[in-house]
Image (cartoon, rainbow, N blue to C red; front, side, top):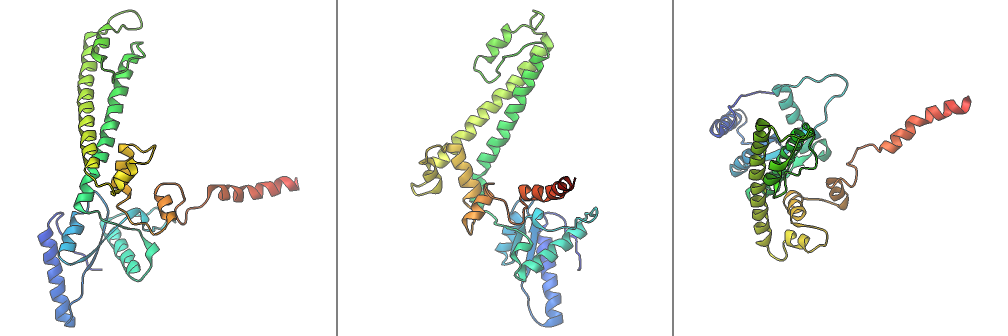
Length: 276
């Protein structure tokens, strides 16, 4: 396999390399062959896939965890080895072996953008938990428990707190807790802003839209409906088993049942006990 290095993000250099390869192939064979490109789904998102498709190039985005690797020994990992593995997976996929890897359905720019709200809210909630736990930990080290940083009277209650030995909070500790509360209040405001944008997005959908239909089901709130709509319903499922596997309700193909494995391991031990 020939290897060429292109600086990351340099689309012009990538297309120039494709043009050179097409020119070389035409000079050798007199024919023009289409390009088929494969890339891993990663931190770069799907903008490269969109650029290639706009240029009329067949592009595939693969889930890197779905490519089989050798488990006999510790495997070396380099860009060259990963590139060759991607090419081999693409060749097998084009030969008609669909289970050799899992291709990712690239979302449209609109689909990719609207799921930012749910993901941002998830990050903000995790940060809120960290700040709340940090405040509680600082106060617990002084013998104070029962303080809830998310209550509206958090500032007033902080002035009346006393340590376990009956003293007011030390000045530096109180200043640190106040700064934590400042960051926490900023997070609470950002969470409210994100939830407001989410509600506006859901309200703007038509009556027959999936998000609106999900909200009509009892037990499904705005956040769960937005997550299902933005993260799951844009995907393509061939049957009900794939839907259940995506939701974690059914094992994926090739996954061993742990109960069966446990029974198989217990059989030799049972036979030994019977002999004794």
